[in-house]
Image (cartoon, rainbow, N blue to C red; front, side, top):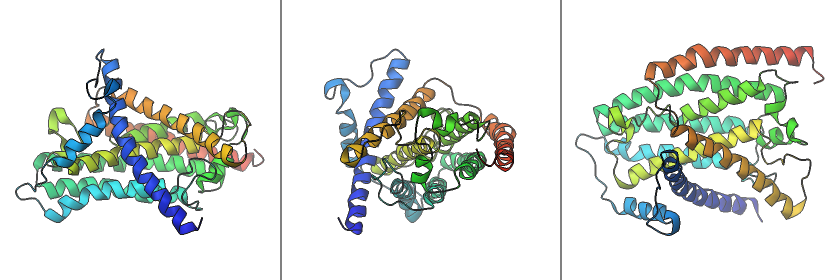
Length: 338
């Protein structure tokens, strides 16, 4: 198949995947919350409530769209797209298996973080364009949070680039081939704090995607609905889809950088179409295990206080990630054969 058509088909697949993923991760979230809190969750619309996300989507699409009084119409309408479109574009360089990727490029890791930086701008402009004081307060919190947690996340990513000597996501996965103890999270020979690096990256991805206990963008108990206060119907729906798409991207990066990506835990990788589905199976299994952990954390830990959230990054995560970077550089310099 010609390359342009393959990329277009993959983008269509990614858009469908992002939509269905957001819809049914909401179902998983509601069911998970119900079980944690000894409730039942959705059960009326379809068997086990499986059609509830479709009903909710139809409800959002049929709601009236309107501009709040005093809102900036351009910023108000563009902001949800600034959250959703970069997330869709980031999917295009994520290798779901060795060959199941829209475009394999040498700076795929850099591209994802470049697109991720647009997400916070979308939230900021959406809040500013809403002309709502609660939304503006939430946007100020969100910008502070994202700036604070991008630093230890990027330092951790720099450490991984030093270890793998590449920003090509497929090459990072290939460097973890073999038994499961070759996955980077277990490679203490290349960095003594590699499990700590994974923990820092995972915590930062929770904060970057505004997930509990770091959900300051939508602090319902104190800021109504935060950034999303004035958004009705599909305006809110697009923000919601973008949030869940970013959760998937954060979990996918954690899988690629630390958990072997599409590599199986045993040295068995069949060739041909079977190899594609084999790699896809292991990638999705690891991906949704991390996403389940994200949902579990949301309904287990309460929201932290804002200043404690910032202190965690500036006083704990950033010093540890810098120490890890220096220690890894020393290990590479002293033991270059590892």
